[in-house]
Amino acid sequence: MILQDEQILLRPLAEADVSTVAEACQDRDIQRWLSALPFPYGEEDARTFIQSATDARAITDAATGELLGCIGWDEVDQGNLQIGYWVKREARGRGVATRALSLLARWALEERGSPRAQLLAEPGNVASCRVAEKAGFRREGLLRSYLDFKGERRDVLMFSLLAEDL
Image 1 (cartoon, rainbow, N blue to C red):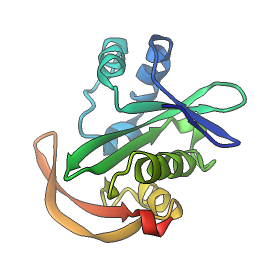
Image 2: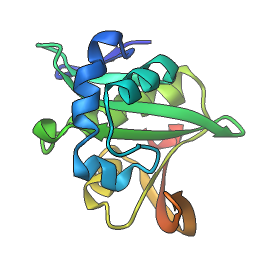
Image 3: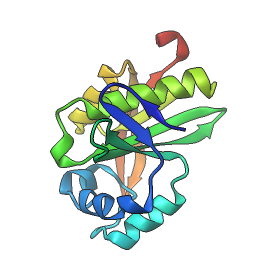
């Protein structure tokens, strides 16, 4: 599945993305919010991720093909899709994550037929919360001590989008 708007293109990750993914995932801001990332994060970690990430897409610049980030999903229960994303430092503040989230959520709800798209963000991750809201997701509430982050329990906010919200 490939999705595109006038500025970004979502495509499958490829071996050619290994070095860019490895470099981006060493960023302390990405490490701060993504619990599954080892530190340090190297090319072998990126290669393993890319080979196993069938439900993830590279977020790329539609004009240049530059890798800007990554967005992925998991079916969590009853057909609901949980979405996660990151954008490399140089691409932040340009609406890249919002565009990617909007494209993927619309695909999930309209084409895939998922009853619900959702995402989790820590309350302190203000940028991710803004992305969710700008993409039309509604904040549902705080899930206390929900996330195991490298041995520490953390609160998260739940956001959702339904087909009727589009």
